[in-house]
Length: 400
Image (cartoon, rainbow, N blue to C red):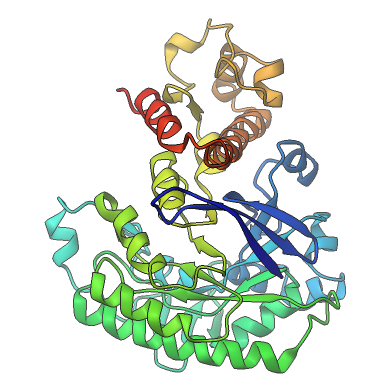
């Protein structure tokens, strides 16, 4: 992997770059489309290519459970298995420690508002019905059949080598905004130890046996919403021989940009940075301004399947009655396949009739919207009008 910075944002951490991988280049900043189970839900790989998405991210935990990483290895790697010939990433499975642990059966997400004092004051526990964490690894039960499994840093890296993505991540513990300072510190230190073990296993394995290509390993910075922990984690992880870095864990919604800046002021400038699980337009602008190169999030397709659509003037719910006889585009000026061929009224009909095509057309539009937005942000840096574009876009999108 090779990363080159082409231009920097004046007086800020933001930059434009090009990231070269064994399966092609990524022009950064870029939005990474999430294909959790070797598929972008409701959308074919060919349709993803047509919206000019550059990268796909798959989920280590889910692919391990089904179909199993050994089957993917036998297929020649995930690129061949799912017919995607562009750059690809896999996460480590660390997020499932959170989603099947602290967050399981609860409404908590990795992002909390500072005003939610009750949420932020509750301590996190180390175990629940599906997950138990210790210093060596994580015991968990399958979300498919309840069978018992164990992930360690070494196990995660082995699975990711079998999957064969271009960029893989060290195994980490993704914490909750519920976690207090003491637990955030404990989880951060455990993540650092797991990072060293992940790196050692990655170097021991060498090239992926699935693809015959060298993979790049990113270390993950944790520390929650605490400035000293975030900076400490960035210092520790940056001293390890990683090819790039992920910024994970939980955030205060109001201070996400500031938290990203804490980290990126410490991480080496010459290596790429990925903000895990973030896809709201406002957060993307803040991330880019503060030095993020890559983003991933399931939100565009998840919202699309539920009838929520991005427009220049904010989100709309296509199930609202007013759209039943609205024969305009979802978003005027949008050049996606859906907007060029179908109306709000048609999508409203599809959702009301519970037709499968509804999720496909809505997902295509939402993915195009976010991918195109990040490309426009990139171009605005090149054209020296990032701040003007940011102000104009956010004013229209969040005007309500």
